[in-house]
Length: 84
Image (cartoon, rainbow, N blue to C red; front, side):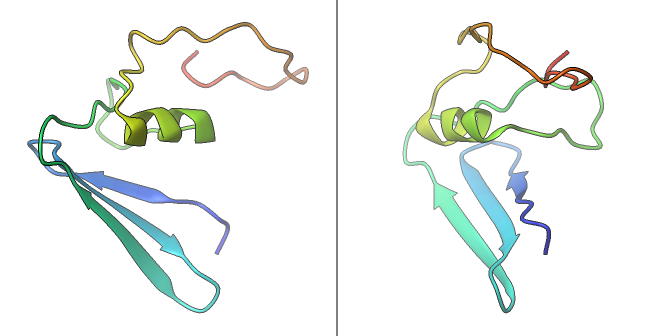
């Protein structure tokens, strides 16, 4: 109920499920690719990762996050940037 989305990829990474709370219950958004696969950010831990909205948009649009460069932006003091 906090607005978080939970993403699940299959082994072949050609299917993604997004689980979220939608006002009065849980909802699932499901997408299956006909060609290619989703490129999730690499992570050392298998527990999970946290994505920013822009990273989720890149993932769903087929943009490889490893080759996309993040431009320098203002951040509030004390906030740790994602991926650092």
